[in-house]
Every structure is written in C-alpha cells, then in structure tokens.
Image (tube, rainbow, N blue to C red):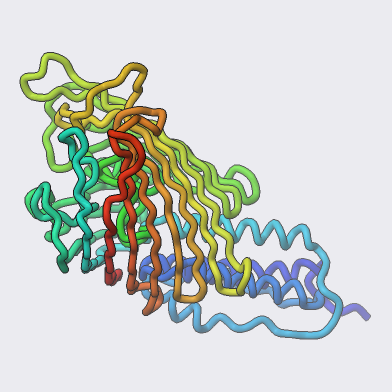
Length: 467
C-alpha cells in the first residue's frame, strides 16, 4: 500500500528553502532600514542553507506561501524562524541546485544592501560625527599655491589649528509610497567646517521606479561619479576621503540633476550590472543654472560575487561671469573593489579597493580650482589611491596610499605632485551604529628644488553615531 507524499526527494527540501528565502527577504529589508549590516543576515541564511544540504531527503508537507511582514514586523519574523531539524542520513543530492540558490541569495542580499532602505511613509536617519585633530605644520605652499592644507579641518583659509569640532550632523528624512515605486529623500546638515562654505540643504530628490532595475531621479543629489565620492559619509573607510575622491578632486559632488539608473541588474548567476546616466546643471549644490546647456555624467559597473569593477565620466562647459569663453569641466575614472569574508576567521572581512581619476580642476562657476601654470602636453589633474582593510569582529585596521598631481596626467609633475599615507584603526559598537576611529596621515610633497619635502604629521580621532 502506497502512502501519499510529495513527488521527488528534492521537492520537500525545495519548499523549505523557499520558505527560508521568503522570510529572510523582509528580514534583510528591515535590517537595511534600521542601519544594520545586511551581511550578518546573509551569513545566517548561508548557514541555514548549509544545514539543509546536510539533511536527508524526507517528505515535507506543503507549506503555505509566506507573506512578507510589514515594515516594523520583520524583527519578530526573524526571531520566529525555526531552526532546521537535524537528522542523520545521507546528504541530499542536487548540489547544483543548491549552489544556484546560494548565488540567487547572494544577489538578493547585494540588492538589499544597495537600497537606501526606504520604508513606507516617513523615516528618519541621523549621522553625528565629532572630531579631534592634531596638526604638525601641515599647510604648505609651493610657487605661491596652497597644495596641502590640513585636510578638511581648517576654520580660516591658510591657517590650521589643533582643535575639537563637530564635523557632520546629517539629518535624513526619507520614505516610500505605492509599494516603494515612489520614494523621496531630503537631507540637511546644519554643521559645517568652515561654516561659511557649507549649505544647509544637501539632498532633495524624488525617485520613480516603474519597473525593476529602472529608476528615474530628479532633484539635488550626488551625480554619477567615482566609487569613494558616491560613498556616504557614514560608510567611509577612513575619516577623510582621499584627495581624488574628495571635494578638491573629482568626488563628493552634488548638483541638480535628472537621472535614469538601475542597481544590481542580474545578468548571470553571481554577475550583476549597475548603470546611471544623468543630465546635470553643472552649477553645484544650491546654485541656480546660469546657461542653457547641461553637463552629462555617467557610471557603469559590474559585480561578480565579491569583486566590483566600474568606470565613470563627466563632461560639460562652465563659464565664469565676465569670462570670454567657457572652460571644459571633464572627468574620467576607473575603480575596483574586492571583499573577502571568512578568510582567516569565521567573522572577518578583508577589503581591497583602488581608484584612478583624471580631469580638469574647474569649479562649477567656471573658475579653476588651482592656479597652476599649464605645461606642454599636460591633460589635466590626475591621481589614484589603493587601500586595504581587515576587520575581525568589531575591530578594523587599514592603510591607504595615494598620489595626486593637480597639474599633469603623468603623476610626476616636478614640484607639484604629492603623496599621502594614511593608517587607521576603527572600533565598532552597538551593531555598527557607533564607531570610534583614529587616523594617522603622513603627507609628502615634491620639492621644486628637487627631492621630497615631508610635511609634518596629522593625527585625527572621530566618534560617529549612525541611526
């Protein structure tokens, strides 16, 4: 006499895995909303899959379709997920299907991690950063031009002091409607150093997502640019951005834009695509347009498992008031990143990142950022950085080397190029909502008379709270 059971050994186990997937997806969304590291939930999901693979193939009753819990209830759903039953027996077959599922779960986690986490209605985020800085004569002028000035902690141009100050107090208001097909973001920062150079409003954007992997954005935000430049201040690897990725280089720029983009578009198992194309006013944040033309910014990147590679470009013309002709504002860059988890310990993270960029040092108002004399064959400023960081549990160590040449693409203009070495240590706490950081920066500038000129030391400490 035959007893009724689900057909095939793999079907029962497949239903279990589908149930885990449906329940873990809203859990990941909740984690992103709350600022929790999604990687922790991805790792937990991977362990569940490994346990399922070790189980024998047994009939499983039909499981009703799980409904994604509403925002705010996902935490309860996570606690109520039962642990998979352990039983002895032969491991289930179908390794290929399991690996395919694992790849799909990786894509899912990457997709969730790439989102801003806008829940329905109204959400609020806060980033607070306080710093202390000790400088050893870091301001240097070469040929009358300031080529290095105490990173971003100067209160008066040309002077740098040892000080304690508040660096950021970013307040973010965001949310989504119509199943998140319409999202909004408004971010302000009432704190700035120096205060006169900061604008209260940073971002104000409206995003329409009519189809998966297709977003239309209008408003003021960071336009498509390099990797470090578009990284949020709360997630920077070091206290300061590199010269290349900061405001004095080709990154961390905001402007009014109209953009079409998509993130984590699946191409092949484990292989995704990011793209963005924007029409930009070109006048910088909180400045009105002064001409009828628009600048163009674009970015394209590919993710394969833990490796990312991408490129970005910008081109437009800006004319200063009273100037006879506009100046071309152009930039091009390439980037890569590799993140390895569980390499030495179960809970470690090893990260490598590098970026190169080249372009003109032209401001949004049509003036140049540095009054360097053009040289024959020069094609603009250029630079690169390479960094490595290792995190074990809640402690992370890292180092970064960068080279910046504001006058020539050859990275060795006599008398003008500079090198910077940064070493840092971070201590995370409260589920990564808090971080204590200490950085040591050693700048070395090329001397016009030959040789090199070491320019003191900079030591910075920072405490960060992120909600």
